[in-house]
Image (tube, rainbow, N blue to C red; front, top):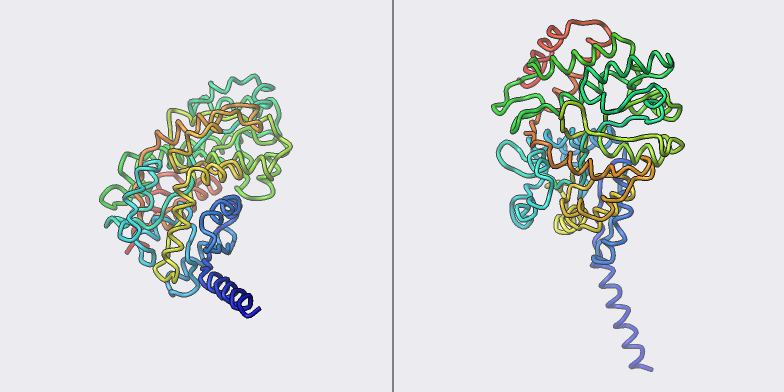
Length: 412
């Protein structure tokens, strides 16, 4: 009996030791991406049973605002932080995240595994690499096949901007309650994001000079204004109830977005429109990134080794990337995941179209874009300038000149 008691006590001690050695790490994340992690965690838990992952989810804006504050104060940071493309440049140029190029991370060993342009997005001007890419948003052109058929429009005729606008006029003539697009501003943004010269940034050139008064922005604003002046957009803001209703009720015929929009439409925005949507590449040979997510490790993390183990699994494990893709439609940044048989299958929501092949082609043609710590500032100022042009009739060149001055002032 004494021997049995000793064995039992030893087993309990070992069990307690194993429990004590289990590390709990926290991941700061925003909606949709948290759903991706949830389907990836079972595979991770099998490989790493001694690491427990707790998700802390905040809405997109709240997450990034809290992260900005936490980096400034050094308080409230998680072991892993999700970063959306709109913020990764700012965080890369600042301080507070581990440089994954350095030991023990040695991220250079993994960079060749990803869609090339994602690496530049998370790299600072001085070469620090602060976050691993997990998903990308190759820009794509969504259209309602039923609406175009009814209006007698061939989607191929919309592959120039002039043809796109003319199609919008036909749709409007067919039914005054149906609009070409939810908001004309989206046409401006897809041009801004997709016409960048190789090695340059969205708002800055290679030397860091502000370029928002250049021809790329003038053209983008002009196209948006043509659409607004012709009454072809519904003047609806993205991520609003009116936006969702436009998709559900068929009052919006087209939308430019990232490949990820298919998952949103299918899962919660407008599931009743299954089979009515199709996609094609962007007009005039444009290829651009519309969204994307990354994972970084704050320097304040107490569990950096475990955080890196999780990030490597989420970003470099092919099966994990494919699981996330199937769950939420997040297009994998990992090149090997893009060759999964799932990419060759028709997408039922898109009428059986092999849309993933098209998105993969687009992803491989997107040029690397240099991140700048002032990208978010520039984005906010250009958004205001675009609203002034579309809503208040402000002169385009005057609005852009003023935006340039404001960006330069904020930089100083």
